[in-house]
Image: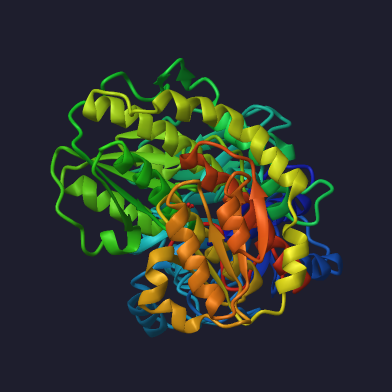
Length: 609
Ligand code: M6R
C-alpha cells in the first residue's frame, strides 16, 4: 500500500531507485515517481500509471544526483493522476517528499497552510508535509529541525522521506507504517550505498544488511554515513541484521508471473515451514520456550483476506483437538472485540506483519492485557516486533498480490502450532498427533505431484466464460472454499463466492444455474454430506468440479470433473486442494488476460485501516 524508497551514494541512483520501485510495485501501481537532489536543486519526474510508464518518461529526462527518493502509489486521497503522484514538493520546489500511510489531520493542516499563503497542486494528504517543512524552514532553523517540527504536526500513520536542494542527504521517519534501512558495503566506507524502503525486497539485490527502524526514529542518511535519533534528537542504536532472503527470491526468472512462480515454490515453502520443528511426536519453535502456553485456555485468531482463511483452517485444527478457538476478521475485532481474559491467546496471522487492521486488532487485545502471538512471514515486521511472541512461516518473499505460497506455509505452521498448543493447553497430544506430523512431512512432495499433474488449465478453458463461480466445502475444506473464491475473484475479476457446503440450501442455491460451476472440496471426511450438496447443485444443472483425494470415489462420481489430489491425512488434504484451486484461478485469469500479479484496485500490503 504505497511503496517508498530512497537511495544515497549508489553509483547510479536513478537505476537503484527504479529497481527499488519495480521490486515494491506489489505495494501499489497507480502512479510512480522519483526525485533527485544534486546540489543545484531537486528534480522530480512522476506520472500516473505503472512503473514502466515512469521508465519511459525518465528515458527522455536526464536526471542526476547522489541522493534520491522514489514512490509507487496506491491511491487513498485523490485519483491516480500525474498531479497526485509522489514525490510532492513545496512552493519553492526546493524540497520533495514521499509518503506511505495516511495523514489524518491533513484537511486542517491544509487550511492552516493555505491561510499562510501556500499553494497546493494535488488532492493528496501527503502534500501538507513539504509545505509544513517549508513553513518551518522559513521560520528559521535547518532542514532537520524543520523536518522534525513538520512531522510532529502530523497525526495518523506515516513513513515519510525528504530530500532538500541544499543537502546531500535524505531524512526519513516512521510512525505506524513500515520503513527499513539497508546498508551496502559497510557504513562510512567510501563505497557505501544506503537504501530506505517500505520493505526489504526493494533493495535485496544490493544488500541483505538491514536496520529495522522503530516508530519515532528519525534517520539522516548521507554518502558519508547515517545517524538514527529519537523524536527528541537523542541518538538511538539500532542493530544491523542480516536477512536470509536471496535476491533470486524477488526475481521472476523465466516465469510470466510471480504468482505462478510462487505457486510452484510451495513444496519448498512448506518444507521450510516444517524443517527442524518436529522431533518425534513433539513440535518445537525456536522462539517459544517449553510450557509457554500452559496457562492458555482459549485461542482467538485475527487476520484478513487469505490469512483469515488460513486462520479459519488453523482454528478448525485446534477445535478438533479440544482447544477452544475462534477466528475474527481483524477489522471487526478492532472495533468490537469479543470477551477475553488473561487465559486467552490472541494470534495475529499476517503474511506481511504490516496489515493495519490486524495490527489494530492485536493492539486492542494488548491494551486489554491479552497475550499476543504473531504468525508472520516477515522477520522485523511490526507484528513480529509488537507481539509478545512470534512464529515465522518461512515462506520467503511473496511478490504477487494474490497470496499463494504463504497460505500453504501458514497452514503448515498453524498445523504445527495446533499440535504444540494442544500439548500445552490440554497437557496431552491429539489422538493422531504423530499421524498428522508424519503426514506433514510428505506434503511438499504431494504438492509437487499436484503441480505436475494438474488439469486445472483444461478446466479453466472449459468453464472460462461462466457467469459466476461457487466453492463449497465443510470444516477445513470450507476455509479452502473461501480461499478458492477469493483467489479467483481478485485475479480474474469474475464473481466468485465460497460457502459452507451445508449452507447452500439456506440461500446461496438460488444463485446456482447451469452457467455457474461449483467447485466442491473434499477432504476424506463428511463425504456423504458433501455428495448430498453436490447432488443439490447438479439437480439445478450446475456443473460440479470435485477437488478430491484419489480415494474419494463417491465424490468424484457425483461430479462432472475432478481435480485430483494425492490421498493424505484428512486435516491436510485441504492444503493440497487449495493448490489446485490456485491453479484454476491462475489459468482462468490468464485466459481472460488479466494483470495477474497486479490486480486492479489492490495492493499487497494494506497498511491503512
Ligand atoms: O499481509 P497479510 O497476510 O496480513 O495480508 C492480508 C490480506 O490483505 C491478504 O491476504 C489479501 O487478502 C491478499 N491479496 C489475498 O490474496
